[in-house]
Image 1 (tube, one colour):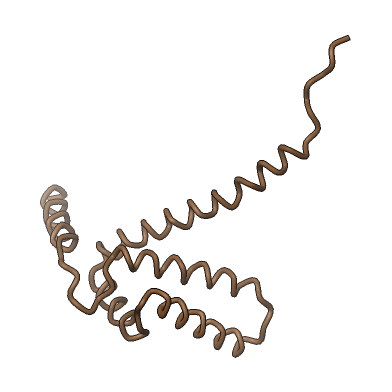
Image 2 (image 1 turned 135 degrees about the vertical axis):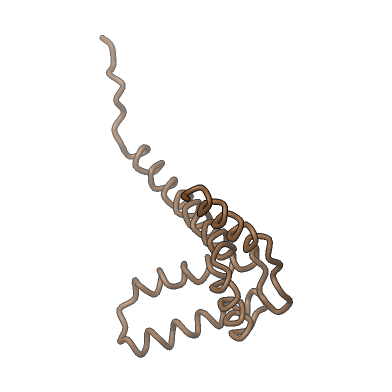
Length: 129
């Protein structure tokens, strides 16, 4: 019984992964870049102390600017989100790439800090008499 359920589930998810992204939907590779930028903007906004209505307005403006920078409209983004939410296997692949991208960026930001700490640390070499 378990084997049958596994076969059915794998065939179901396999079909979803091969689904073509329709015209008018942001392609997966571009969606990774857009979502990554949106997450970075949200993180920056999280550091700002503003009233919630001001923060919401700023968030909308950031989202609009990010979409404009990548050549998409809010409608393109919303249509794409509906598609990806209806195809969770594809969306999972997109979000895995988003997470990998964010992790790499975080590592790059932390590396100079670690090197700076190492440069500031006193030398552990002991002078021999």
